[in-house]
Length: 313
Image (cartoon, rainbow, N blue to C red; front, side):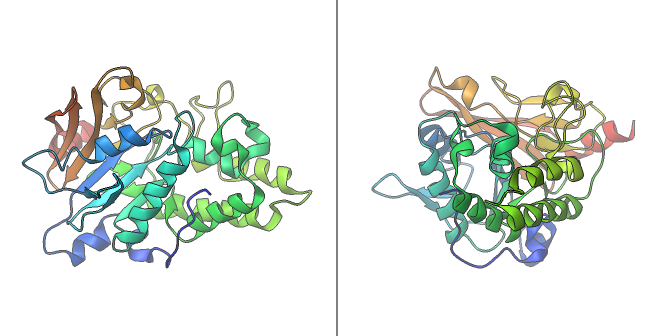
């Protein structure tokens, strides 16, 4: 079942960005993020455990005797930056992991941004991708997922300390509260017509009226006209607002000016290692990537000051 969450909705002050939690914390919580798990549960667990296996970091998750991961109780925010499902063999397992972490962590500590594969759940008749896990959900499962969005567990974007997190990103500035509100507005429309004769028309309508988030390109879904869940990395210029995206596959983390792509898990499936996470603090952005079966390396990507210098150039 697509991300059925037991528990209260995310408080408004924690939904859109780190500022609410940072104000409550004596030490600003680092943001750990990864993207594009795509149903590969083993590799996702390895990526999350890179902090556990590295002597310089507290763990973000702990592992029980059955191999299941749990919230470790340390001072972090964990962002799953879109595309939890499809392609891999363990879609239900990935969703169970994310659900468990959301329910175990304090409110606002685990955030999920909408990926284009989750967007299939919103408009399955339009995309007609029945071969995918996300394209096979029932009306009841769609409504469950809509509830997760309405309750603030799944969002369009999340504002970090110096970077905004969205699955595909945007070449232009935007406000996270505005795009998260428009995503909720979209599922309000879809909820009202789900399973009715008007369902398919509503699915098409939200792609057009909420294009900043859900829109697809003209010649290709990932083209330059696409929204936050669809735009290809090649259409994000170096002077775009500072942001961390997934969506476009790479062998290792990529930087184009202010924009960083963290989608590396799938391109490294054929060999040990390659999976990892980004870690953002108020003063740094790093990638912790597993090399081989266990060895990790911390790559300092850029300082926020460097990003601001590029943005103002």
